Amino acid sequence: VSSELQEYLIIDGSLFKNLPSNQKELAVDKGELKHDQLETIEIESFQLSPDNTKILLFTRGGISAYVLYYKNITTNEITFLDFGEEALWSPNNRYIAFTRRPTDVGPLYLFVFDTLLNENIEIIYTKDKIYTGYKRLAWSSTSDAITAQYETRDDIPYGNIIDKGETKIMLKL
Image (cartoon, rainbow, N blue to C red; front, side):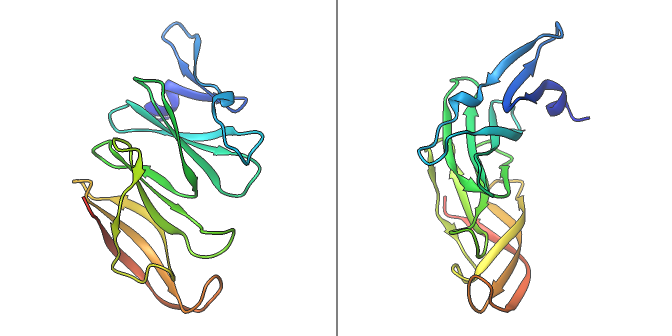
């Protein structure tokens, strides 16, 4: 069992921190997670940043994609990122890479959110931006690039696969 799972646990859609005294402290109340289009949001899983100062929250709100938030543990600020599928922290704790479909169907586009600036940053694509989807994301050790599996289709959402493999995507920093 990872230390992440020992330190935190999800109970009834909220996130709790285990205290040394075997007591539990509320870390993120599901009631704090708001979105205009969703009535109920519950935490389904989470990921601590490498330095343990932020928590990436994978929540569900009655739709197929996750509703992604992150919480800064120091300031207690919760930020809505986007709807998404796969997501992970960069090694330097600053960025969150995630994939998202533009609609319910189609390729998984890649996004990178800068937690310092609270905005998405530009990505330098090496593949066709519109017709290519990404999965199995992995950060470079320097947090300036992402390696991902990709599939490029001749039409979206269900065209034929015309190219697939692994690619390195650089961030415009």
